[in-house]
Amino acid sequence: MQFTIEERHLADLRGGAVPDSVTFHTCKAASVEDAVNEHVGSDGGEIIGKVQTFPGFQGMATVRKPTGVYTLTIGPSSQQLRTS
Image (tube, rainbow, N blue to C red):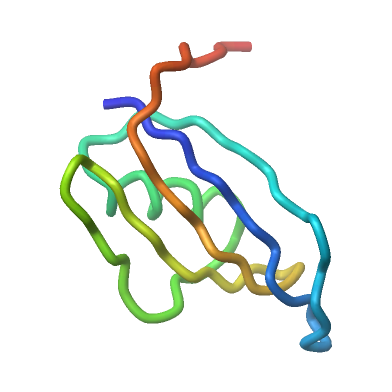
């Protein structure tokens, strides 16, 4: 299944807020948890707590990466994956 991941930068390494910092990513995975693990693993991050899942292949997770703390919102995607 294809997922879109909205990644919202919550805090920098010093704990300061990062305004208006949102990026979108698309990946293919079997589940919400797999999509989060694939995305986090590719960025050298770690999941804080656990991945929350909701009906309809929706989910949320909090992630710490070398550049700060992020919230991920995951949902099914209708976009085609780009292969480069």
